Length: 332
Image (cartoon, rainbow, N blue to C red; front, side, top):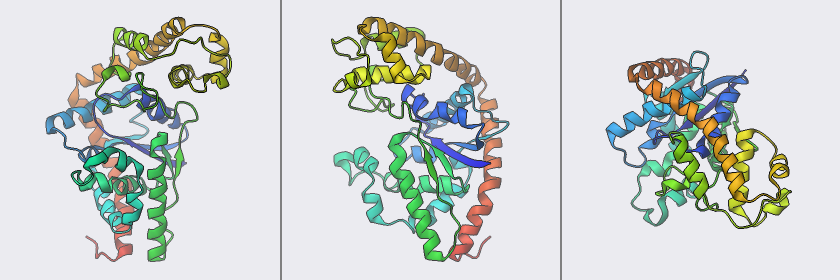
């Protein structure tokens, strides 16, 4: 079976965008291969984190993933820092990747903004660690959101250069698995921007720990236009807020966009928003309730993560040991 790897940073409760763009797909993929799902706490500290908050956010992320349906008895859920192979391979990849490649990474440019000279070097080499996360397991399939496509292309470039430089065929190519629907869920307040945990305006997103009243309120206040819903996708052109809300509905209901538009064609947004809120509440509140039950037993969550880290280490260490032997290290 294929080996599938993906990761998410522990920065509090994920948003609906994280869920539809990646996490829900993680659950579905469990029937298609051997899955490793990583809480990437080393990536998280590329920006300063309060230590106590980081530890709690790691538990929160684990609880949510289990609540969504990750089967930790059959697949591996772990936190990145507990598997030293990630950092070991990342250093090799720091020495393989070229500065010019990293300079082209659009996410670094977006996150650094005008403070490029003041951000951490960790943020700059973040893509090399992401490549190591995947290649440490010889994973070949990586479910991610569309915004990570460029990083996966870089991971393949690094693997290809490593193989070429050392005359080996050691690291395989990886393939991005990007869901065709809802790959990018946009802000409820500005549909030209991605829905994000880091947006200072909480009303811009649906969080997976929002209660039913909060979800309904956010959807009622979501930015829209004054036109009724069209009967075809072409009618959404130039209407980003309308397209975003209809796309969310279609993704949650797992229905074609055309079917949703046929159902609501000619209706105003008051009716549509009410139905969308009901659908969101039906999906999100059970996940939140289960996550809260798990968070009441932090020792149980940490036990699951430790077990996952031990299983991940057993897979990664032989691969990284061999990579280090290939570059000429004496070994341990």
